[in-house]
Image (cartoon, rainbow, N blue to C red; front, side):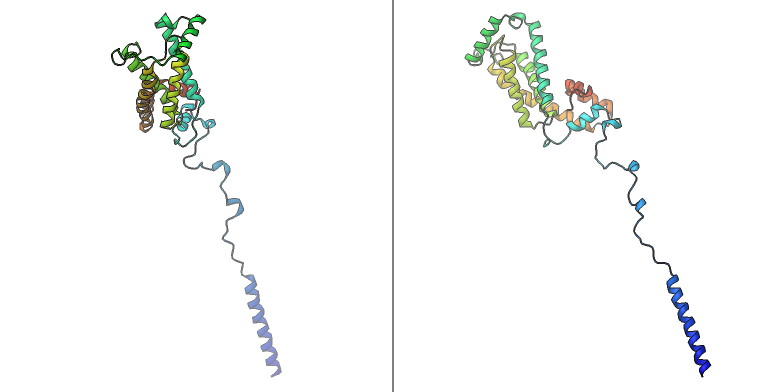
Length: 249
């Protein structure tokens, strides 16, 4: 019995050792976590998120960048400098044209005459002659009052709208611009007109909002030349300024 017990013990030891060796020989399961070097994409292959604006350094034209900023929601902060400088330029050019077309009184630059007219403008009420026909209450031809002042007001209004002004803010801007024109630019030649003070911003707001709606709707035109043509028709000066990169709205 002794040898048998010895052999059995030896066999049991061999089997136990074999089982223990097989258990230790099994390789551990590799972690499913991704490797550190493949966890993040390479920086040079990153794709910008949808809707992100491509920097101008990547080749975006100034006009396209300006249109993207101008099409921002109206809740964005309005840009003040472009409509102010634009309006001052329009007033200056218009006043110069008046001096050429009607030298008397607009080309009379004598200081005493300017002093007299400015004094009259700020000491008397705006001119309104009810005895005159409709839209001639300030003694100007009716086409100038109806079309000229309507276009002038719409130019001021539209420039404010394209620079992210709300409609009420653009109306207030047109009212302020009209008063500057009547009491600042034109008052050295003629007395301010009550008709112009009311009609210019109101007609300008109606016509200007129509121009602004057309300008915004042109974004849906697929053809780039056609889109530019429509926008240039409704906002020629603004398109020149945006295309030249002078302003960003």
